[in-house]
Length: 310
Ligand SMILES: [Mg+2]
Image (cartoon, rainbow, N blue to C red):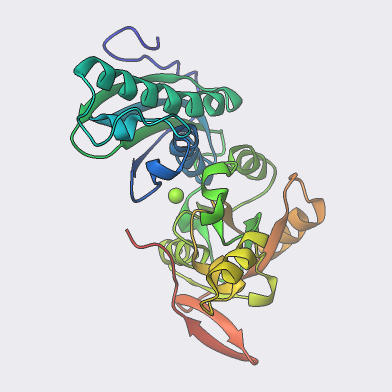
């Protein structure tokens, strides 16, 4: 049962653990409503949840959406619309509610195609208005396969570090348009012995550090092999502040790719099979010493994991 009753009822089928994840997105932190089509905000809000479900190798079952809409006309105005008034509180109540409704509709227009693509309903939610900025909070519910959840804690020294896709410069647009790696995670978990996974929301080195810490080990990176996104080079060029494309790839965050751990033989098999439509790259190995490490002129040195700190 979806929207219409006091609560949704999910058909749980027979197998699989229930996986629950929640993400809170706030205007000014995760997006700037003044500068972006709210459809892209809606798309991002749901896709970040799917990225977390992907990291756990679980199939999305349903999502519920809570929206706190800003009161007043300006925040409700859609990009490209003429400004008929100036300043907040300038529209009569009805029109104000109208612009909030328009904003809510645009957000849903961004979310629904993602839900459809990944085959799950938005099973309910709650909408409110307040004096603050737009806040979107989505809870997504997933189901694990018979192989159970893929956790951060399964990496062991000697295992390889595999990543999907490319990293860095996400702020130039990828953080709105990324493809959550749900299908990829399910396929890899089904066909191979993947030992651990995390999705990259805060930064490649920061999230790798979290996975390694949960696994009670460290990670040794081969910096030459980090797949750097063209956007990382573009951002380095635009900013011109001396931060290299590699540094962007290691620290930027919101790549929403996966970091995976697999034994050396299994990793070789995955790389040889190349079972995904996107590249998988071996960027190093897990080691017994805690922390993130790399080689600098043949010497093993500690690296400070960098990324977004909440
Ligand atoms: Mg995550």
